[in-house]
Length: 435
Image 1 (spheres, rainbow, N blue to C red):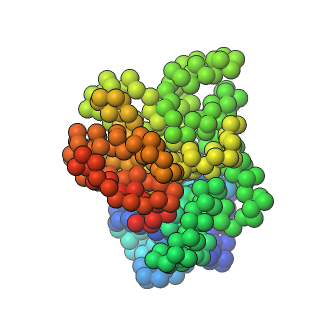
Image 2 (cartoon, one colour):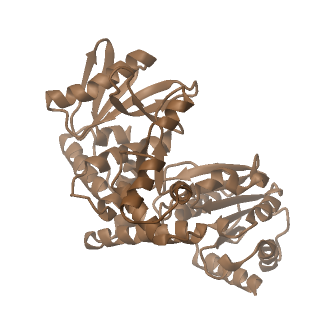
Image 3 (cartoon, rainbow, N blue to C red):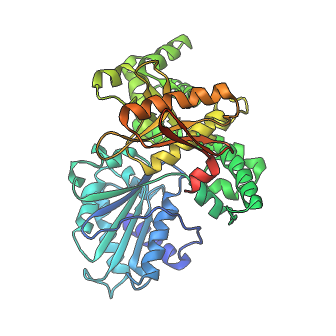
């Protein structure tokens, strides 16, 4: 019976306790009568971030003991076969296993990957109605932030996005505390940035032998496609899906459109419809695998007319899965900057200048809807022509929109300069990522 399996899983969790973990830095909001959610890609660390919340509840004495925490992982084959009606047994099983508990006993319910159960929303809403019970769910679908988490959750949930490790977290996971003010410390950080660029920010990679890291990244990518796209969405053309996503890996930081991807697949000999390609592109976003960012414009027509720049949840997936990767880290460098910006800012675009259509890699838009900062990404600006190519569009854009914060993120060069009254800061990536 499902209730017996629930009981076994809870008893195992209470017996084994919370495993050791390295704390993540992003705060998670747990609000009474609201459903808190952790949303992010597979292997980004959602489960351990949820367990970190459980540990915080215990340390802060928000719950009396670990038995006040109901943790269930719906990646489990038996639990994933549950239906909405079965979910109602969770509360009964939890209280049955704790005879001294009642509806007034402070408790924390954590449901890992519960979105796999159709109709899960009503069950967690019912739990959240009790002010003494806090509810936290996790999921690998960006739709949990939108309409997929159903109309029932609107106004009743608060979400936190979980990304692979930031550079600061990467240092924590590698137990590095370098002195940024010393030459030795800066050299150490620069060396670690090289590793971060090559292997990315998936937490498990920090504990994996280097000889096995590339294999693990290939397994991650294959599993993301199979479980988070093909199986979840019932994709009927899996070969085309896999081919498309490998193509997108080769397009990191480049413009991609529905038309161009459709044309590419047709040129490769695949018989696939335009609507199917559009769905596959949407699935790649919903599964937190790829992120397209549009051009910045006040004209919807111009936004629709221009391609979206394509980025991956973790650049190391492209490093070790792209069919055309040549060992260069320039695309990974730009993708790394993108992910850092994405975790901090909800509105992110690229821009083409009005006069010469020169590209600004990233524009951050403030609450006013107007650009608040511009960012160029260039590994090496020692060449004068290269520097001019990066500076000219920054200057043009900053003057046009009145932007005061303008950056060029470099591999290891730092300088401040002005051009036509526009102040620009070139900053090493390791320093920029830690600010």
